[in-house]
Image (cartoon, rainbow, N blue to C red; front, side, top):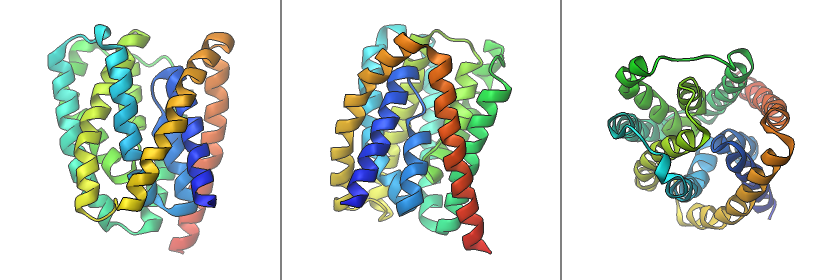
Length: 247
């Protein structure tokens, strides 16, 4: 019962964040669940809700999609990376995975705070879409978090909120489509986790409209700062526990 409650709370917070900014759900969900149950369990539990929520948002903002060549390169390479990352997930020790998740969450906070206005020339971004997508996919498959790569990359292009969400959704769909059967194949996803991930879709989908409403009322900056503070605390705890286990 405790595992169930923790998972539902994590997805509730993740859904609020996704509804507000269209991204960041795994940065909330994976570290919280990892603290109690380990990274493989967290990544497997998140796989199905990630696919479902991004299909929903991708369809919702489908009219904002542009430059299909760029999207195909980014999403296709991310899918390949997710396959590679899943095999890494199945082979690395728990402490190493926890350390990776903690460092990724911490780096995400650092990028958001130190480089909020960082920009990237669009032509150059198109040329590096494949390696960026590949790295993001590997991180997603191995640690369940690709936001430190994918979110700053797309944010630096200064896309509209609608196009940002639509593009990121397609990338996550590609990763999830590969990741879900891969997790089953390597034995990380079993029937118990699969059923839990189905139920986890409920708080995620219920919270997404809440996040959209909150960001309209209070603004993105205040909401974003609160999330960053929480992520910092979670990341530091994961890193500390991982280093304690390795020592």
